[in-house]
Length: 262
Length: 262
Image (cartoon, rainbow over all chains, first blue to last red):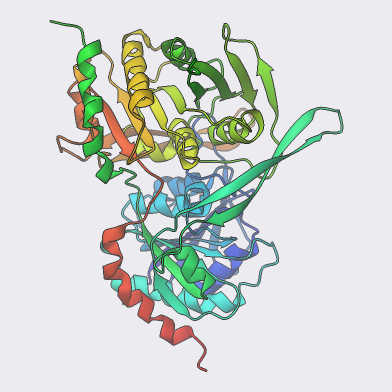
């Protein structure tokens, strides 16, 4: 009898987030699930890892018939603990992260704990998908996107990811027209800090901002989402700006100045 | 009279780290410096930002004749505070982050607070450089690399970065042979968790690991560093795996299954 696929599930909104529960429910029929998720919300934690202090991990009973462990660290810590402590002798067939409450399209990928957790698993050679719904509210309705999540996971399990090991999947709210394979849109956050005084009269700064898309390309994820499509961006951990290598060669020459003569 | 360039300096090891002082000293003659650095060590914080709580920021007097502000957040928070609060009406000519105590070559870039701070500035269109010395110790000797840091910053200020806005500069210990423009090496961390019991008998997990280079390419940063060269990797925030887009088109077809028929 063929073993059911092993599905590692994590997120950045924490163990009790409705998006995590929606993800677990979406794929429950597909395979054996193990959930390793942060014990506190970890939005915006990017690829942070915990190195200066120890981590805690406890098994918790929050899903019916699904093993779940909560961890004191970041989303990436969760994946590292899953791989190195809980699943020492088994490699997951797939790692799913999310469903995030809010967009991780475009530049959001670099700030996202959801996608960083998936990237961490992809670094270990595991096919990995970060799912995000374009609704930041805690009470977001994940129902309409669950069939798509299931379809995408089944497709990836059946076909495996080849050229890439990491998919950034964002799901629009409302009527879904289909799926588009996209590139990361060029966009930015226009930010400001809300400034105030705390109850003791000390000044504080609280980050706030709005997302600004700079990219009109039909192959950009933000554009596909605006048109009602689920965007899938194959992603990677190589940050080299290859086309800039040639134009920097003059910088290599300045070494002659500081190198001690022999 | 031409205004001196404005140099924003940050790091991830915190305001009191010797590497930050070494960086400030390296470029002190070149321009006007403003330091905005974390008030605690923030190694491994990647591109984390603080969204669920307010930040604190205070001017501190730790460098002679250099404005310095310490911030309660992450390295990326520091850059955001610098841009949006301290330098609302002036754009730095360059942002320098480091000098990190330890390598940020290869895959380390995604975990690195040092490089993430520089990337954050690059997102704002600012020429940005992350500097790292391949010595993790607090008492690392930054002296030998300071002339190179100065040369590189002067070169970038004079020539500007064009195709890329972000350089990941790693500096070997010992005799420096020169500078090589490189790509990010393919490498991984082989990790385990040190497990133990705390003084109250509760179990803990503490991340440990060793870096494993998988890349023999002469243009890989890790290889250049092993050969005694400073590695400079032009880097970017677009994580799209472009060459994988075509092979994923079959995934776009599954949408037909879940889309409600009209």
